[in-house]
Length: 125
Image (cartoon, rainbow, N blue to C red):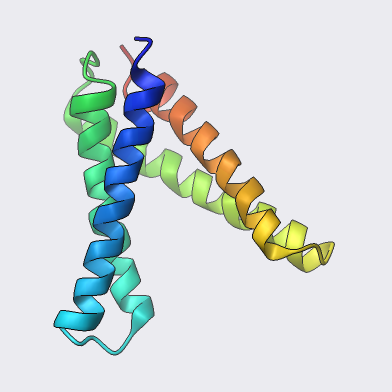
């Protein structure tokens, strides 16, 4: 139980690496012209890795059925993505503060909410 936050960060790091590698593969090897489309496909791959890592590595004591977890996971991640975007919009577009710092704040929000959402809603013990 004490290792969950560490395992969560490791899993997030692995998912991020997968996301970046798929993005790069799509652009450099498959020669896709659209970085946006490449990133969407890469994000889906990274999210799948994140889900599997959370289910089997981070929150492995959860006994919830797979499809319930998938449904909740998608719901949590869509809500967090919207929150991340809203924070960045308010910070950078409304108040005209530096977007980099706003992105960092939104990412802290994202990581915190993602961990808590996964722990308390998606992969309940």
